[in-house]
Image (cartoon, rainbow, N blue to C red; front, side, top):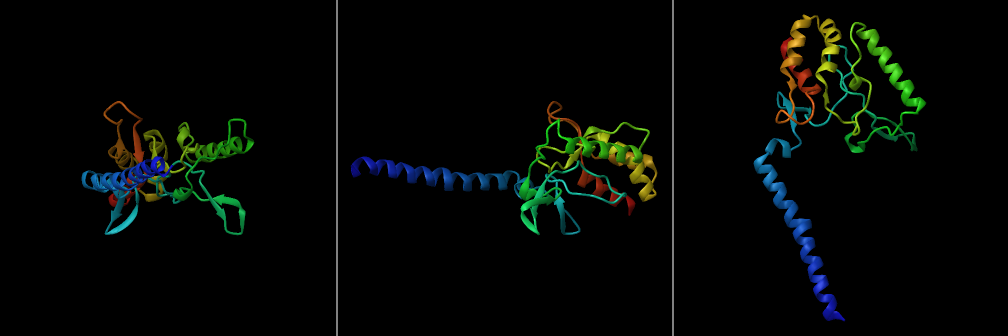
Length: 200
């Protein structure tokens, strides 16, 4: 019986070493050599300090900054471990709200978001991505329409001409991948950093 088990054990150990150790190490090394910035998390730094990642959104509350999509991520409630509390852009707990189209909670949240945004800019239709969450809750990008919708608020808060702010949105709009895949998008962190640089 040991004669039949020995090859199975050898194959198990060999495959474990190959697929569980050697392959991940080689792929990590190759990724680090070919795509060093991406392999390190696409971190963005300013003045030697990491301010975020191009891949994970973050919450901006100030009127003088562009706001990203709402995030439905949560974290354990520090006062009651059986409950959760809102923790926007919590990368340790990525996920959507799982609220369906018949959910009153979702309907009320959407109505509240639309009303708040209409009060901010009554002349324009509210872009859907400013009131809906993404599946991951970590989306760093918004549509160009969502960024342009916020131009009047940001320009007023920063005392900048709307045309200058609109130009920054255009400069920070990324097109479709290879001209075919995905939708045009604006990275909120990159746009806000460009906004800070323009204000200096």
